Image (cartoon, rainbow, N blue to C red; front, side, top):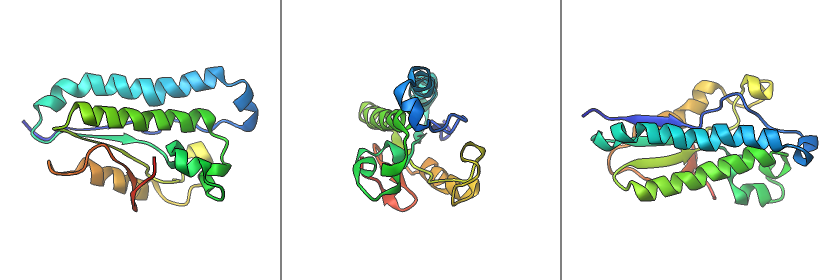
Amino acid sequence: MATITLITGANKGIGFETARLLISAGHTIRRLYETNVVGLVRTTRAFLPLLTKSANPVVVNVSSSLGSLERVTTAGLPESQIPAMAYGSSKAALNMITVHYAKAFPNMRINAVDPGYTATDINGNSGFQTAAAAAAIIAQMACLEPDGPTGTYRDAHGPLPW
């Protein structure tokens, strides 16, 4: 069977909440988790029959540096200044799910990637890189060979702290 690559968790137009939403964001949190966490699990489950038959199964979960507990809690880093409780925690959950899937399916390469702060409609095109540049790490991880890494969290520069 041909190589099967699944890319999940891509930005679906659900962005960061403001500080006022941190107080009363139940619906926002639910919506983000439905997309970034539950959606990832449902999509992965739907593709598992094909992935398990593939000679080179790869799953790339699109995360964010805002899902890194270390980066969000390190003073001076940009992530520590962004009020993104719902978004960041949903990406941290995505990272944990990535690790558990990688452990459950050791014959697959299942990784989380942070494409970086990208100029898109969701952030008013304020990102410092193009969508094409952001896609490079996703494409790189989607093309892993069978001996490639699994259960990792990285960006274009290498491993990220959990």
